[in-house]
Length: 472
Image (tube, rainbow, N blue to C red; front, side, top):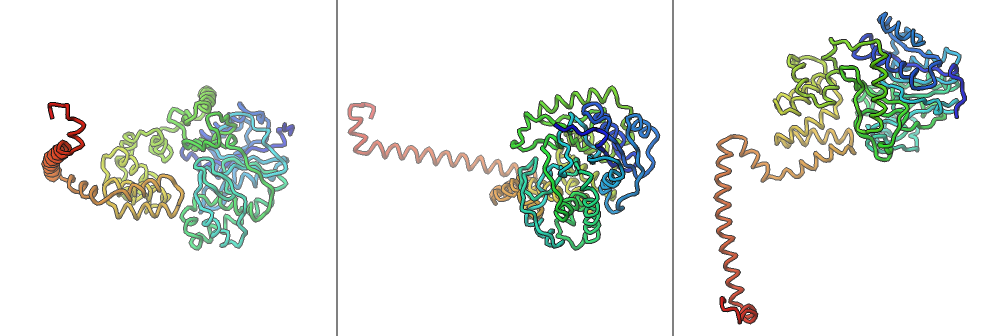
């Protein structure tokens, strides 16, 4: 049992750009649930902003005992790297442990027993984005030795090197300075060398904060251990059965901004966890001061959350005026996804997927979904090109391989059929010919069957066995 005094522990987060999406609301959720569901209400608490926050959220946080820190942007080329400021600010405090949290987490139970002054603690990533050979190419680029240890991902059961989700990181202060220096160094190197990196990494620069952390951990040789799934439970659908999710009791829920417009955190696929989410939602409803800005109904998060509950018609309504030249890659993607799922306009869906890719959306998902749509429309060459590109990015992804198997089974006869029925008259002609072919087939089959019967009846064996049957 951890007997460390709460005032020797710092809990901090880095808040997104002022008022961006649900930033203020999520920050309040984090610290309210920390005070309600853990024994760390008296811990040192900080929230790092890169600009002066609204007076309303500042007042809320101060009433919760949270110190608002105004920090400079870590690197303008990478917004997610601002989380490093939490560690930097934590090192200034008289504490023993620094707990770094993303704002899109809520505390579900007291996690004090997981705190340590001897090892860095962090959970392996949810999904396997990079193969071992791809990691080897990056480590070779930086002239580092690839770690020999392997972990299973939380969701897709892929094996990977020590690569971690940055939503929950527990750092003994004694390790903090060395980790900070190496982390900043590799983040800068990744950004500076982006165009020279192995392509899979340059295409996924959004994750440079986590990739640089992994490189820093390898380079610094600091002691670390993995946190269980319960300490960073991801909302994203189902997790590996290896984790026994039906019985999982989470300490920290990483909801990934999955908040409904009534302020409730969405449900996950597991009943026991949903009971905890019910408890959290009930508490937050009666205690939260921050409200969702109704002007954000077309924000990326609001639109994405509608897709999470399959409300694609509402997305089409909200994005009906989105120009093809709008450079918001995320909104182009969600509009394409909605057109795809509702089958309202599949040609436009293809165009929107392409725009999303052009404007910088994550290539893997575009290749997979655009490829599956090409396959649906019988554009087999285009489907093959996209799905192979998706497979190059993630060779072990189940859905990619399933779609490629469907492509292999798209035999010429089926392709001809699809081409025939694309116009009405062709479809009618096909049916008429099929009926004629069926009748001719049945007539020939009956004739062949009767001939076979007659041949059997003429055989010596038949006559012998049925010599007392007068009907014969």
